[in-house]
Image (cartoon, rainbow, N blue to C red; front, top):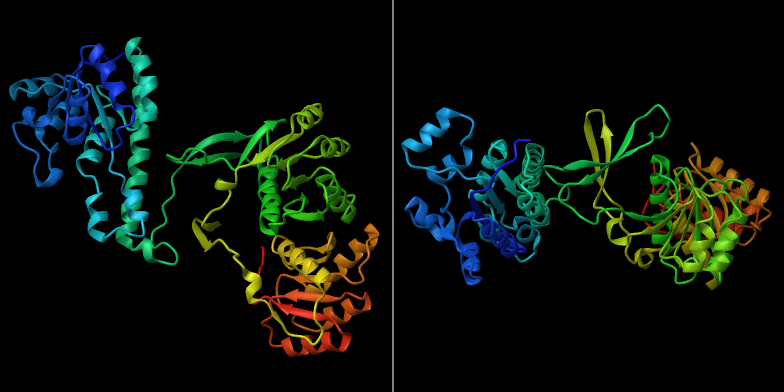
Length: 516
């Protein structure tokens, strides 16, 4: 099993969480402990028998701690392969003893680098030199040395120490974690020197991930798929699953799309969105979540089958009883009442999810470009309505303002070219992913007619400008009251004139919201 006996250790940590408990466990096993700087001071204050590295190398810490472990007596002791006679003879010839354990974590470069108040000198001083060097040396020599990089590893290590179970596979795993840790650390430093902090988009883009979960398959059954988690980041999962079978690749994609609609709407009233293949097929507003759900279903009573339902309110018993009547893949909610869980858990396969709002937002959208990447900023919206501009003689009523707001926030999340027809209670019709804008409108009208919803007096939202007046003329035939769109076409005046002719109001948002 090649279990390693720990006789001699170096403890030198920036994050001192758990270090006393670890040191006491080592002391109990008669391990000789060496330390530096603040770690040395803390261990002594807690009564741990510890020796300074300065006394070992017969050289003081200098330059404010910049140089304290960079010495052959340290690195030879870490790098010596205990199965290599030549290495052992070399150690003996210079009176150096090997180390069996290295416990090091690094200066918190990330925190200082990301702080708006940090000076360049303060950032530079957080670039650790000795720490990464010791970590890499210990990881390289995992056959002879155990290396710990994070306080979360201490408990398992102590258990293995006490049971003499520090075997080769465990040491190799710890060594791998070292290089994950230093890769992320070095990437941020490289970004600092490349000017990432002040750039609109990073000059260097580094991302480290490790496989977290293998999925049954990808978008199609012949495609392999997995979820990868960010390195060294806990609490990263966008959704917590309470019940149901494994979530598929397509389900994950649809769940993210569903949550974004609810997030964008920011309504205090209960809102429910039904999603199919990343597009909303219905969105409803109501006095209760059940009422909002039934309104969303009414917009398309066929397509929501086998889709995703997302709401901004807790799922109560009344809502759960309604949800269980249909075949749904996933339900996303802030929480579930105990009695509603009991009802929904009777359906073995349905996935019940809670959104983790803090992990659902990111800075960039990343897509493959062959073997390269296309990167853009995530589109963010903050009080954007303050920039909206009425460009017609006709003005929206108070009731239509709510419909306008709802339609605009939904059309952001529909595949382009996109048209959404909405009233104050939800979606009336949706036209998604069309090559022409007027065709998207025709589909939205057809969907509304099939659903038996009233098109007259609703608002039309478009994700980009109208290149011609044909969509406005068509909207007038169905007595649509108003339009909200980005504007920016060379035919804007023609389109505005068409609205004035038909006494339709038009609002320009000034922002295109393509969703490819």
